[in-house]
Length: 443
Figure (tube, rainbow, N blue to C red):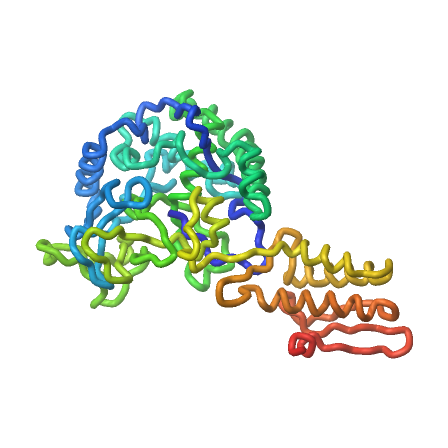
């Protein structure tokens, strides 16, 4: 499932630039598809078909793990048949079994049309790959799709009634994020996706040319896809496109997870898969760059569920992206987020005249240019500390000084770098004062 990077200092309320999710109403009927997650196949048949598919594609599961609905917190999950020790390999997924724009049956077409498929989200090629494979009767991923959740029953807030979403999630930032997602999904579908499918009608049947299905698949990608981390030297590039990782996306999430997905090879003596066939099983050297592997990070007792992590996710993020939240106090990554504009408005309410108000706005604009604050950013307070301590402390000090200095000063800024504030010069009609912001931060 998606494991977003740690939130940036000034982040949009929505993790998506363009897409998002599905209907929650029980009366909503899933769209009929020739193949895919119908929800009607008996569990034993679906799991048995998936395990046979794993064998065919070289996806090796440890004999110590079991794919089942029994003993899991939600839907299909993975449970330990036997006790597992930290470092043990739970399963390894060959890259050839990943479902992405590069491995689907229309990969050549998607590559040729890559320029026309560019979007803010960057998800369009994967979504088109899923739309095609879902309706292809002979899709090699059909056994994998059989373990997907039923698309018409996804529980993201995007599919809640609007009144319910606003009433239950007011103040979390989720309703605003969902509204942006819905607008962006609709725009992306009608401007890029639908024209592409109509231009290639031989590859996309009428059953998949649907905004409703597109929303559902966006929700699925939001909750179940992965993004391979970039190397350090690639950090400045655009993020990698999402991809679907069979078996890995079966695992549920908790903050205190006991397994982790690894994307790159370790040294020769890395984790091994134990069990009766361990001599023929996957070793770290076989994994190399051709496999993704799920490795235990804590002892896992027999009968206990195996949990991955979707990242350091506050409950509002879990609700928005996955449709669930961890009960208090289990989510050690939970936060209280204070919208930055709320702090600005509170400071403006404390001003006594127009001079103070103008100076405060000028200083706020300066902080925005330094990317310490933003119109859609938030100050993030965690369990143990303020995660945006530098930004919050600087904002409070600058705002307080704006009010204190307003009657006689005009604010002017000099900076040595674009990413940090170095010196703030305050020109007064009589004194020409200079204040080093670093000294402010030490107050």
